[in-house]
Amino acid sequence: MQQRFRDGVSKWFCPQQSTGSQAIQADPISAMVPERYPLAELPTKEDSSLVTTYTSAALVWTTSALPLSFHPSSPTTPSSIAPLDLSSPSSSGEEDEGRTSDPPSPDPSDRFQCAHCGISCSSRAALSRHQLSHCSAGTNANLVENSNMADSATTRAAFRCKHCPKEYNSLGALKMHIRSHTLPCVCTTCGKAFSRPWLLRGHIRTHTGERPFSCPHCNRAFADRSNLRAHLQTHSEVKKYQCSTCSRTFSRMSLLHKHTVSSCCPSA
DNA sequence: CTGGGGACGGGGCCC
DNA sequence: TGGGCCCCGTCCCCA
Image (cartoon, rainbow, N blue to C red; front, side, top):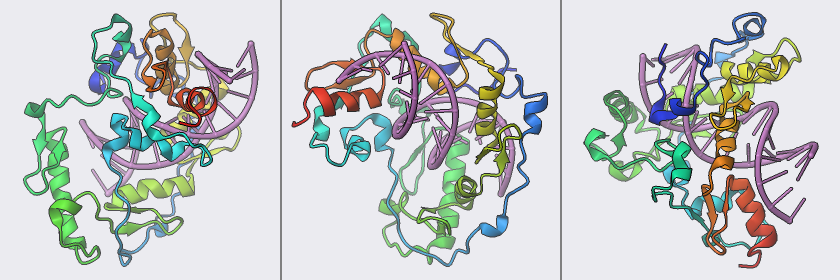
């Protein structure tokens, strides 16, 4: 029954069963029609080029990650926004405690580091898989001309999507991405298609009205866990996102964006 | 204008 | 290798 709840998210997880079991067991589950999956869409490995590296920078709220979604015309400098340090033991930040929305704790003791490239993995399994990527990367090495292994461990890519410019360094990742083009999961109620079954399940809740995620503070229920997470921020006195100009905090990045662009420091 | 909810997309991780 | 799940994030809409 206990599922994998990384980083203590079970603290505010719904009291009901796991996400995959409620209300989906009846008709809605039959709404999933994942038979449309054209594997033939998978590309060959002939394509080879380096692509932009997706670093984990965005995960630690670095300001450099912010302008990606800023309005192009906005003169706001990224440096006007800074991640809020919630390290202070504020009781208001209780629901944020231990979640992965926080920067991952260094805790090197339980990290599994790759001897090849130094990348830290969260588990032995992850490390094993990562090391396999070195093996497969060796296979792909001629696809991705790269001589600096240590520096390029995160940059090599060999599998290119034929529908868009995206590239991936593993076939599995590419297959997953291609689903976003093929949308194999179709809602039988409204016909809307989704890339993954659980996306469809979430969508089906909009039809059924099911709200399995409830707030422990106000008992308000949500159909989407992410929305509950955002809601929990409203109960926190100190919000996660802070404007470095006026120190005002916001529950959402988007609100911070609006604030910096429109009212606080639009010309900064 | 601001804050918040609803709906959804996508990459990563674990089994 | 694939499915399921998690988290992060965005966009839109409304009060």
